[in-house]
Image 1 (cartoon, rainbow, N blue to C red):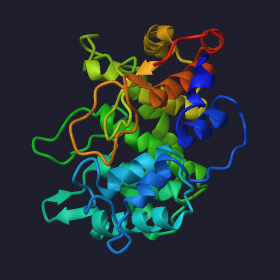
Image 2: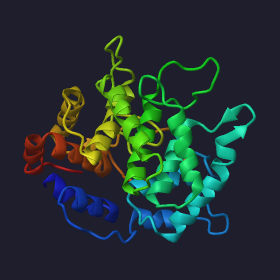
Image 3: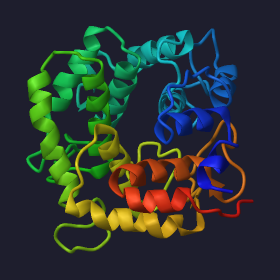
Image 4: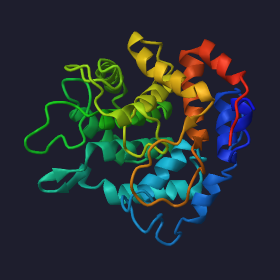
Length: 310
């Protein structure tokens, strides 16, 4: 069976995303499959999942919304809309000040901003979050989650920086004009921050920062990996940069068997298993999206090859 045929035997979510990103088909998402299963677990009275806003991980409202967003739930769906508003009510107040000594973590703010912009939420708190993020960009071009801890960090975090970039991508798609020029100026600095590391290597030692960064994970949660970065770059259609090559080579090596594995699961509660066995349609789809844009010759070879799947 060829990879795209195999993907199209998966959950309706995978079918929609495969048709949209690998077949260029204009498909309407009916919120079926996994998305419908998440909706069944939503508490209508509390307007939340998992009986919590940010925790317990990974069944809380915040992380369930993150999964729904990646699955491209209809952003105008009533459940999505009210859950995002409830999330903002609990997580963004007094302009991010959590207590007299601390503001909300930068990575959390970035994820909330991305969720709100995906839902086209019209709320002044969206612009407050933009202010907060722009105010605390580091000199190296990125952002750090706990920028105000003591002693203050001197370098940015890849984990936080990718969340900010994804949020700004959603912000740009919504065509907000508030501080748009400043955002446009900040973004390339963050690209360079990641690319200088070749997406996963220390600039100083050239060593792999963390081997989890060269393994596929789905869902990614708040964590960074090189393929999340490449998927972001592919989504904004950033031209190939020579510093992407090593990470793309890793994808090609892993795709030799026709699929990407599920990878290591992050410890925590889950609503239900998304995929059984070792093969991951989500990660395979992610890999093929990246290769289609950045390495079309390898992509064509892979999609036209028959592989065995369990």
